[in-house]
Amino acid sequence: MELERAALGLKLLGDKTRLTIVAVLKQRECCVCEFQEIFDMSQPSISQHLRKLKDSGIVNEARKGQWVYYSLNQQSDLFELVNDILKHAPDQTEKIYQIEKSNPTLRCGC
Amino acid sequence: MELERAALGLKLLGDKTRLTIVAVLKQRECCVCEFQEIFDMSQPSISQHLRKLKDSGIVNEARKGQWVYYSLNQQSDLFELVNDILKHAPDQTEKIYQIEKSNPTLRCGC
DNA sequence: ACCTTATATAAGGAAATAGTTATATGTTAA
DNA sequence: TTAACATATAACTATTTCCTTATATAAGGT
Image (cartoon, rainbow over all chains, first blue to last red):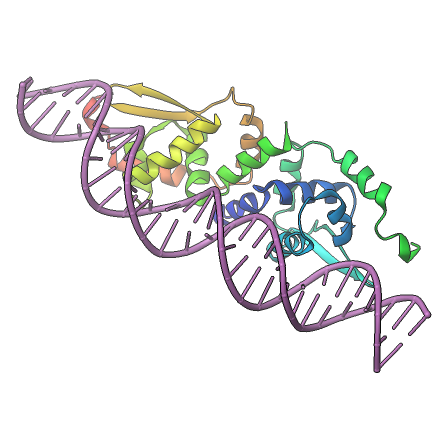
């Protein structure tokens, strides 16, 4: 991989919020309103972080009804790098629990 | 490792210049004037990048006469992360060659 | 159609960042 | 002790970053 491309990936993951996002996505795909449960910031702010990750190809986005689900893009040229980095990041089971406890997508019945 | 600490390391390596510095240091320790041979920027700018890497513990600094040599700090809590990242960065033999061709520390006789 | 919910985009502001030039500090050698 | 070299620090600037609020778009339910 080009050094510049790797630097872009590292810069994107060099933010606490975005690193947490990808660490959570490694365990489970999530929609925006689920991330709202675990971050103490506005919905637009979360959307903007997800957009950057999407633009770089690190994550995929898929609309399901009114929700947009994000997941790690395993086809990305940055996937292996991201994956290796995540080996050094703490498990996010606690955050996942926090999401599931509040269950913001309850209404969809799925 | 704490997520916040990992994010700091990633942010530091998420800069083209600093990522190149650590990639070069993986192959060979270098002093500031050697980095000046491979970066198209001022000496203070290079010093400032090295300071950030030093402050985080990623690199070591050792004065040898009038030169200050930098090397990867293998004792750093970030070393394994850095090392895994460098697996995804290109080899820097070309840059090393560029340094050795101009040999800025010629005068020391070492 | 209309209201509600979910998400995205636009616009703006405060703080961080990466570079610059000028100057200070530390080391060597004449 | 003075000059030359290597590096660090200070002060400043332009740009980028991350957040905010306000608004737009998209989908679902009544």
